[in-house]
Length: 248
Image 1 (cartoon, rainbow, N blue to C red):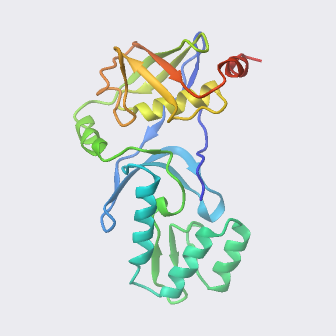
Image 2 (cartoon, helix red, strand yellow):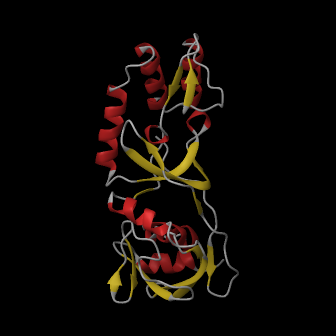
Image 3 (cartoon, rainbow, N blue to C red):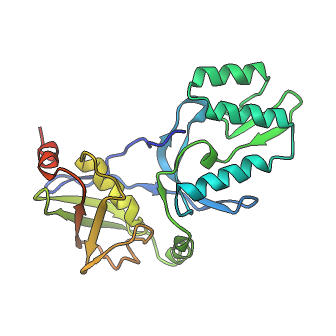
């Protein structure tokens, strides 16, 4: 399944201009499966018939996501079982062209060119949630569901933030919404700094003497417009990344 999202530049090293903001949609809910997720505007993952918006999911980790996927496929009782099996096999097929051939042979129609919605030859509709097609950009956990509701009480504003990276001896300036999650801020930083072997999980953002949690928004992390936080990363060759992050 696809896992990498299309990149937008959201920041520049200190001294450059501000970046564009990353848009997050309202929370969507698969009521039957009790799964909530949120799409990231303007970013996509997967190819061809498996292409979907990038998304964040309100689950703890991949193990919980796999359990939800298993539950989804094992509870498909409406429609034809052979069509569901065909759709599942196409999703699991790594070659997009082969997957399209399977769909044509089974006379399955994709009105929008995506496996998210399809119809069989008698017109029955089959819907597949995007979390069964591609990997999420981040896991938000369950705690953040309430925090997102709290965020709705605040007006969304653009903030200017600075991330100081002592290991690189460099500052990065960001223009982001105050409802941006810490995990998203990490992702923007990593896209900009282009560090090797560094992930959101191995990156820490510190402010006020504490490590900020991935599923907290900037508002709830007690940051404010114009503030400076620190970024640290672990398990990485610092000297290599110093070289990689230097402008060409």
